[in-house]
Length: 361
Image (cartoon, rainbow, N blue to C red):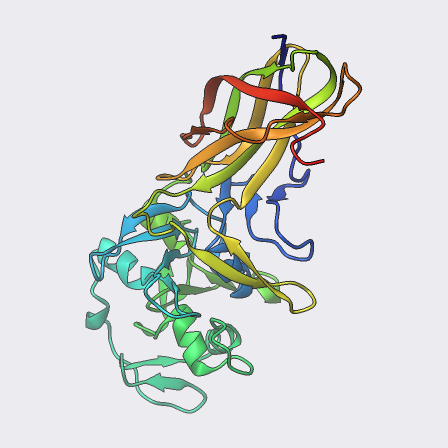
């Protein structure tokens, strides 16, 4: 047998600051990578994040998806932390209630040693909304902002219930406070958010949401990694001329018992046609051969705790010496590996076999 040592070049998913993972339909996006924090937002959270406000409401991803214990019920959920909130996947719920928001307003106050139930109460008054559930009012400059946004629950417009689902009920009256950045601003706390009024900002940025995720969970933790190694291609007995070849990187794959094992999400393209995306196998890319026999894919392979990735045969451009087209044998060459975020993993030698003419012709 002949052996040809070759390596991989990166086939980048995108060249912009945010890179988009491969998706089943061109019009749709299932996952996005943010170089700003070296993290992905992936299924099952990306569609929720995008539909319900994106960066202004949730902020950048602070860390990769992980398994975390909910402080309210003590159960373990697939969770992703963002600058302004925490998203949890609850597979036991029907849609659209499977992704749930954390009560970070309450939790940050608890971390500060403050009990919101001890805050002075408000009274009903003209031009304000009063919430008897908590005894607090919602007035300008925060009232219009609160009413403008809400979780998409299928109603026409933005309803009171959808705004409550996104921000929660008010748990304080407006008061002057110094935030984590040292700015003293008019502030009002909600179950899931903190509203701040910055009068010197342009009009569209005068109401800002506090970075409660950062305040509760600390600094950014990267969720991407790199892979390198050696590629060894076994040629057929008659030999072949290989001009270029690639290896596929795909995943993630979750073991049985993991909350995201086997989870699928329904998406819609621009024509309204539904299709299914799995939380597994949403990342797929090809890396091409380098002449120095090494392969490297760097920068943004998802490193998700509890999940694995795979190397698999990619594409090959070549001709066998008998004149037939060279193809990779598609079976038996899969290699699994696990990644640590922020690190480069050497996967060693990866072997694939070339056949002539393909299996089906």
